[in-house]
Image 1 (cartoon, rainbow, N blue to C red):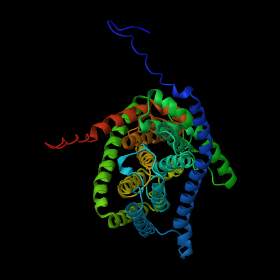
Image 2 (image 1 turned 120 degrees about the horizontal axis):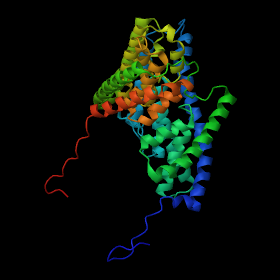
Image 3 (image 1 turned 180 degrees about the horizontal axis):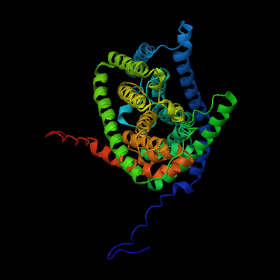
Length: 447
């Protein structure tokens, strides 16, 4: 051990992986694998329930009432009713319905057991009625909360560090296949939580184990029930041209446009959120109705289904790209505007995740620009997805991976352009985000 001049020997630096070498960490891995099974089953059930509610409210119910199809005005009263249910859940149940989606993707800290019913109810009412939010944020919260609750029910004296690791692993299991791959879910959670250094490795091992178990459970349940895995996929991908000077120019332009649009969506959502919270019930009902109006405007303007504006956009990304020839540039612009408006409104009052709607808005914008010279559809789609995703989430690595891995081999071709678009959007988004206010200095004489 080296000695300091004129003093005692310097202390050896702490071993960051000492925990991994203990018997307790091995036990933690076993617990993680076991917890991954019931949590992934619960997550699958949550997604199946939301899917069934969407089909019931927008297909079965209108037919049962005698309509030949779903009227374009149908979302307005339905989303107003959903707003009432969500507002009552937020006001009267513990936990406030979970985190506010307008404030980004929050992954720190698992909710307590009394908060879980309110989070689940607010998310189911929001997503089942077609609000423009995704299931990823509620699943992260519910997965982490269920894991901690299950472990504490068995072992009440569990250490806080072990509880945090198990909560993170529960979140990994809950979103294991949602983004198309357990690795994508892992990147999302690690980047959103700001993990790095040795701590990332310590949490990553049990998290990946839980995600792997969850992916197996999702696949098995999807095959057994015939419902699928509720995973993000794109089946038909058009050919992407190799990057050139024109593509580089489009990457710069899309990055700038996405940052500006993302800032507009985010700031308007925060502006509305402050006003919704003053009159929670009335304002949430009105906000739901306005989301329905945005869907109605799109349907009446373009002649397409109002449902294209509703929902998270997760299952609509593939059909949007596959049916590229069926959308004119004007229709895509109207879709972009109406979806962005509905997205901002949904962020301000409802409960859900911000990931998939940002991807859909970016995809529609990139495809609209692809009607101009020098940009092919696949490149515009990928750059739009990545640039809008980072503008809303501020997670550059996740944005690049989502935009490129989604397109398979064509995604590898356009990856350099996606990286440029994401970096430009990320830099401008940070510049456009207001700096946090400094903490107020304590008053004179206060303790």
